[in-house]
Image (tube, rainbow, N blue to C red; front, side):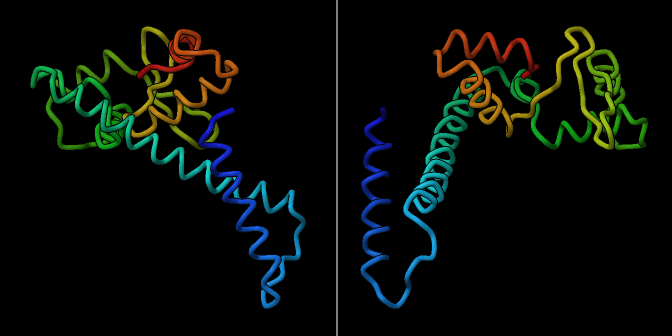
Length: 161
């Protein structure tokens, strides 16, 4: 297991023991439930820190690209909404070149009440820049933490980035 995990587990154990020693605020839950709650909170904090590191590395890579390629290397939420509005045929103030690119590259898929953007050629859902780390993490967990190559194979099968 990860050293960081054991460090957090030790911290959670100390917090629980300290809370038991205080007579003013006794916990009405057992240690296992308390441990699960604390580990969930700590894992979420670790996830957010790792996501910030990932986003910083992606941004530094994008900044090294040619100026023309930077805006379309990853689709950000603003552009995703513009693409969605073009596909819904709503009047928005974008160029005709952008509208042509959107209609040639993407298609709108309605699943229930939500509208999703899929790639027209590969028939894969479009993942925005802001959701990229979460989807890669989901694929990494789905392949059983098997490594970079299997994780990337899983990402390519299910998502367009």
